[in-house]
Length: 109
Length: 116
Image 1 (cartoon, helix red, strand yellow):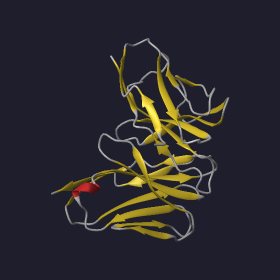
Image 2 (spheres, chains in turn red, brown):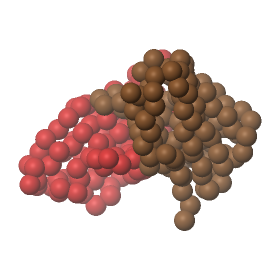
Image 3 (cartoon, one colour):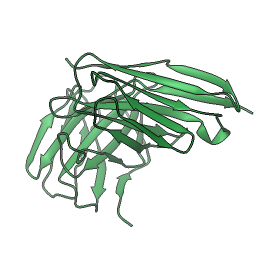
């Protein structure tokens, strides 16, 4: 079945360092979405990428969708303690969303 | 405010008992979903519904049942047949399923079930 792999599973960074999480699909995706889940909270939608090679920015966050529409990345520049949480990618295949396993980010002040 | 309400937030159950988790949305979304979240395993789809009176099994439907009698409501029953029910359960909705942007999910706050 369709799988979306996400790495790394955990990442600890010093505040001010950059952070990147990667998402890879076994099949071509129609689109990819990114969600953030704060500790003890629920996933909240961040962004959706649709076009091959698309790049979108939200302040310190940069999202990329690969040319083959099989991979994606989320890069955070100069992390802050408010960035703490688990970041999930979710790819749309034939019908439903398939979530990656998530990357849990810890930011050390 | 529009959103999704899940209840209860915390629930304890003895082995062998069925339990029903409530999910209500006032977003006028057609599609609703139930996910299970375990540590280190991300979100796994239990059931989803694209329209009233219709629903489909997800990846881990065994031991669960759902109904969709109203557009706003999508309750999940965790039956005694579910071998390892202790988990965090998340309900979500989207305007529609499929691609094109209409499948962006809005999540409820979740229900944490513990089986004693």
